[in-house]
Length: 104
Image 1: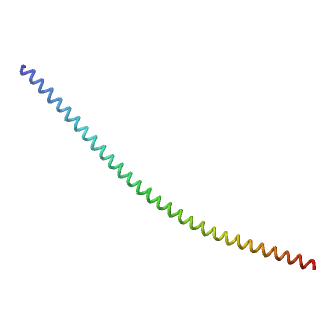
Image 2 (image 1 turned 45 degrees about the horizontal axis):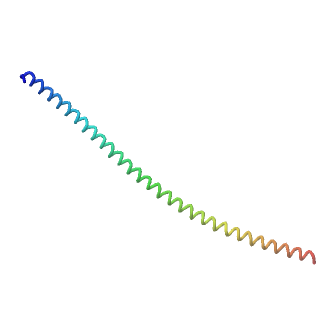
Protein backbone atom coordinates (compact mmCIF):
# COMPACT_ATOMS: atom_id res chain seq x y z
CA UNK A 1 0.00 0.00 0.00
CA UNK A 2 1.37 3.39 -0.92
CA UNK A 3 1.60 6.24 1.58
CA UNK A 4 -1.12 8.07 -0.37
CA UNK A 5 -3.47 5.07 -0.12
CA UNK A 6 -2.71 4.78 3.60
CA UNK A 7 -3.49 8.50 4.07
CA UNK A 8 -6.79 8.10 2.19
CA UNK A 9 -7.65 5.07 4.32
CA UNK A 10 -6.85 7.02 7.51
CA UNK A 11 -8.92 9.98 6.28
CA UNK A 12 -11.81 7.64 5.53
CA UNK A 13 -11.55 6.08 8.99
CA UNK A 14 -11.32 9.50 10.68
CA UNK A 15 -14.33 10.82 8.70
CA UNK A 16 -16.28 7.67 9.44
CA UNK A 17 -15.47 7.98 13.16
CA UNK A 18 -16.49 11.66 13.10
CA UNK A 19 -19.81 10.79 11.46
CA UNK A 20 -20.33 7.93 13.90
CA UNK A 21 -19.49 10.17 16.85
CA UNK A 22 -21.88 12.89 15.62
CA UNK A 23 -24.56 10.28 15.08
CA UNK A 24 -24.03 8.89 18.58
CA UNK A 25 -24.19 12.42 20.01
CA UNK A 26 -27.47 13.09 18.20
CA UNK A 27 -28.81 9.74 19.38
CA UNK A 28 -27.79 10.54 22.97
CA UNK A 29 -29.44 13.97 22.78
CA UNK A 30 -32.63 12.42 21.39
CA UNK A 31 -32.60 9.77 24.13
CA UNK A 32 -32.12 12.45 26.81
CA UNK A 33 -34.96 14.53 25.33
CA UNK A 34 -37.23 11.46 25.18
CA UNK A 35 -36.35 10.64 28.77
CA UNK A 36 -37.10 14.23 29.84
CA UNK A 37 -40.43 14.15 27.99
CA UNK A 38 -41.26 10.78 29.55
CA UNK A 39 -40.49 12.06 33.04
CA UNK A 40 -42.63 15.15 32.43
CA UNK A 41 -45.45 13.02 31.08
CA UNK A 42 -45.18 10.71 34.10
CA UNK A 43 -45.26 13.71 36.45
CA UNK A 44 -48.34 15.07 34.68
CA UNK A 45 -49.97 11.65 34.82
CA UNK A 46 -49.34 11.38 38.55
CA UNK A 47 -50.74 14.89 39.04
CA UNK A 48 -53.83 13.94 37.03
CA UNK A 49 -54.26 10.81 39.14
CA UNK A 50 -54.07 12.90 42.33
CA UNK A 51 -56.61 15.36 40.94
CA UNK A 52 -58.89 12.52 39.88
CA UNK A 53 -58.63 10.91 43.33
CA UNK A 54 -59.51 14.24 44.95
CA UNK A 55 -62.50 14.66 42.63
CA UNK A 56 -63.59 11.10 43.35
CA UNK A 57 -63.46 11.83 47.08
CA UNK A 58 -65.57 14.96 46.55
CA UNK A 59 -68.11 13.04 44.47
CA UNK A 60 -68.38 10.33 47.12
CA UNK A 61 -68.92 13.00 49.79
CA UNK A 62 -71.55 14.74 47.65
CA UNK A 63 -73.35 11.43 47.13
CA UNK A 64 -73.30 10.77 50.87
CA UNK A 65 -74.70 14.24 51.61
CA UNK A 66 -77.40 13.92 48.94
CA UNK A 67 -78.32 10.47 50.18
CA UNK A 68 -78.74 11.77 53.72
CA UNK A 69 -80.79 14.71 52.40
CA UNK A 70 -83.05 12.39 50.43
CA UNK A 71 -83.44 10.14 53.47
CA UNK A 72 -84.58 13.17 55.51
CA UNK A 73 -87.00 14.19 52.78
CA UNK A 74 -88.36 10.65 52.60
CA UNK A 75 -88.96 10.75 56.35
CA UNK A 76 -90.76 14.12 56.08
CA UNK A 77 -92.84 12.74 53.21
CA UNK A 78 -93.79 9.66 55.25
CA UNK A 79 -94.86 11.91 58.14
CA UNK A 80 -96.95 14.07 55.81
CA UNK A 81 -98.56 11.02 54.24
CA UNK A 82 -99.37 9.65 57.69
CA UNK A 83 -100.82 13.01 58.74
CA UNK A 84 -102.84 13.20 55.53
CA UNK A 85 -104.25 9.71 56.09
CA UNK A 86 -105.15 10.65 59.65
CA UNK A 87 -106.82 13.86 58.46
CA UNK A 88 -108.74 11.90 55.82
CA UNK A 89 -109.83 9.38 58.46
CA UNK A 90 -111.04 12.18 60.74
CA UNK A 91 -112.83 13.91 57.88
CA UNK A 92 -114.57 10.67 56.90
CA UNK A 93 -115.59 10.12 60.53
CA UNK A 94 -116.87 13.68 60.75
CA UNK A 95 -118.88 13.20 57.56
CA UNK A 96 -120.41 9.97 58.92
CA UNK A 97 -121.35 11.70 62.16
CA UNK A 98 -122.76 14.67 60.21
CA UNK A 99 -124.89 12.39 58.01
CA UNK A 100 -126.05 10.47 61.09
CA UNK A 101 -126.94 13.72 62.82
CA UNK A 102 -128.80 14.98 59.75
CA UNK A 103 -130.88 11.79 59.64
CA UNK A 104 -132.01 12.20 63.20
